[in-house]
Length: 318
Ligand SMILES: [Zn+2]
Image (cartoon, rainbow, N blue to C red; front, side, top):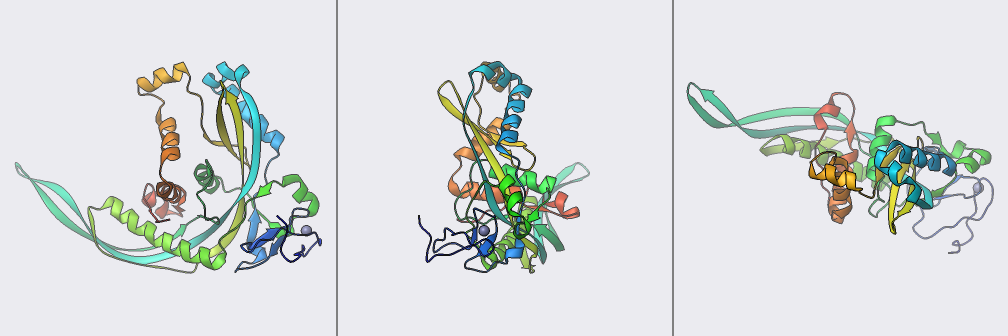
């Protein structure tokens, strides 16, 4: 598609591919982020530099060698595609404050009698949550949920995109998926998500909520971060499988794999099936559930809230 009305890069003058939806156009030649429309500050766009395709392929080979089942079929595997891209995510810290009243059914023993009682609880909360939000409107690609989790736990170093030289860009450049949510939209959604998250946390630990109120504040350090992800596609016995790697440390975070006879036996024994069930579940879910699962998977919080919120659920209509 040809660009609209001749947009050119502010830094190097190269022509930019711009559509009516474009918020930022990242120059393919020098990597400079050009602001086209919507609310976004070029200085708030950060990138996690990616490893090269060769390094990702080496990580794939290591993975095959490490895995006993994969090693057995290694000579029949054929890599036929490797794709790398940056996925844009809004990441910030959202302060939430509120008040909740809820109840739980609890059993008590009095002498020889056991009675069930409805016990009431109340509490204030005042926390800061990290709520990553995909800056794209469509359902995330396979493996992205796991990659974002890994991102939050490894905290890789980010660079301000506008500060990268053309040479630096050249070394780390792969496709950049379009950003479709600008800052004001993102801010609104993450603030809602943060309160939904608190409500769902209490809903998951209580038997019922009687009162809930929550105010979320202006997000702190809200940045658009470009996360590098790679997918290696390979063939085995005429079927296609894939492994997703995070671009900053070449960690394999998600995979579909041929199930060998040995592993099938393990399934039946009820062992080692966990990761496979999780992966299969993720693929077969409906769109809404995937979005829900994504948010559940990626919300973490700082300090004490981290333990408190683990396993809480957030559902959002999409
Ligand atoms: Zn440029």
